[in-house]
Image 1: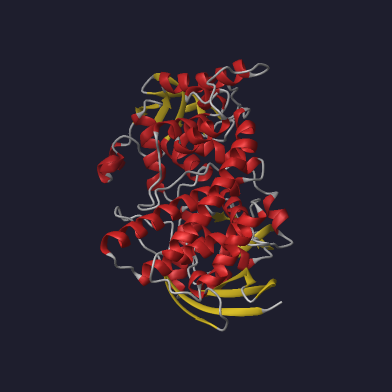
Image 2: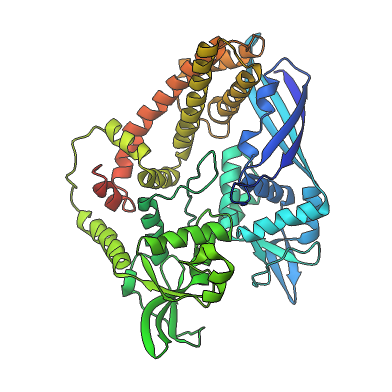
Amino acid sequence: MHKSKINQSSTRLLRKTDDDRQLSKICTLTAVSASADVACRAFANPTTHQDLKDLFSTLVVSLLPLEPHRVRFTKVDYTFISEDAIHNLGNLKLLQSNRMPDPNDPTCTIISTSTTTFAMNKDMARSLCQKFIDAHFIESADGKREQVFPLKGMVWKLTSKGLTILDWFCAKNGIDHDQLPELVNLVSTQLNRLERDQTTDKLCLDRGTVEVIFGRFIGGDGRTKKASTSSTDSNSSRDYKSVSGVVITAERKINGRIYHDTYTGQAISDWLMDYTTTMDIREAVDVATLFVEQDLIEAVVQDRVYSSQFPRCNLFQPTHNAVYQLSQRGQDVVDSSSSSRCSSQGGKTHGTNDSNSQRLDKILTDPTLRLLFRENLRETHCEENLSFYQEVDEFIKQCKAAILAYKKTDVASVEEANELLGQSYVIFNTFLAPGSPRELNINHQLRASLADRMTKARAQDVSGTNILQEVTSLFEGAQNSIFKLMASDSVPKFLHSPKAEYRLVQAGVR
């Protein structure tokens, strides 16, 4: 078996969106040198590690195993200190190994190892750790909600959200560590994964997706939940938690009037930060504002001082002084979802006569069903099928656009061709290469054709479009294969998912 090593250095830039938010993905400027005749340019494009969540996970992996640290008079397990996080971020290294068949001897494998180094000073490292706090990835080990990450002297632990993101990262990249199963067992809540626009990085929040998130925010029992006898608010009689964890006040007296089932703006925004993949408080406000706009909740008391300071928060304020209650429409949405689940249990749901392929087409084009479908695939341990399908779909669109532009102008961009070819290598090594972390089940002959095309592409002239056309055709074949697999195996399971029954019936898929 031949081995080669790619030495890679990268400068990572944290960019911002057009509304001054931190981009969840990281812009990369890369310089590469290689010692073997392999597709170096492809491996030099660390697309799968540009995400800010991946950078957080890379830091945590570098800190493993997490040891107990003393907080006041007790030791807290699975923690780390500020100094260690700052030190590791100052010289954080990410190692990636990629397997490719040897073009000169298909029975052998070339193992290419690339190293990406994130270099930053202490202030930048502290600023990045602050973003991890703001995203609710980590929290103070003493149980207090720390707002500032100090350079030293503080003990930190991963939140359930942070642990889930770490688990996703390790599963995606095939990272194994003896302590990982212990950490995964600490995950206490489900994290709702929201899609993002690939260009703007903004959350994709269609009406149906907002209603699904709202239903989980309320919890499965709506207003029928029993209250506990504890109280944490002087204006409330009793507080309790919904099934999904948001703090609800059963009765709250305001200006001499009793309001039922109310929440503070802070409780709503905290729930969204803890239970969804929102990255900062502004994104949580955006989702909660849609709760108000869609008449799912309504304001009882607004925080006028806060909204005057932040005009964009005129409908929803994420503070303790702002109070909201479940609206009648919000209750109807919860009741409709619950009644649909109950009515479908024990009997068949009569819907359309669509084939499973037609149903899958509808699922993939409906953002809400796509969200629920991904969750179902994750539960059945085959989420990589949908991830591959979507990544290849975007890749094919870019390739066809580049090929069309070439035909119109008769000018091919070497840089663009190299970039697209690089994307194809990332996809191949993530999903299709033997032993890849998310290896898919596709036809052996198709896999062999892809491997042969990938290994020979480096030695050929990429200034034309012939290579892109061939690679695009091969990836289309793999995409069609995965589509058929999802239609025949995953769709029937999804149709019987209790979580999705209401939406499936509503969309006419069942």
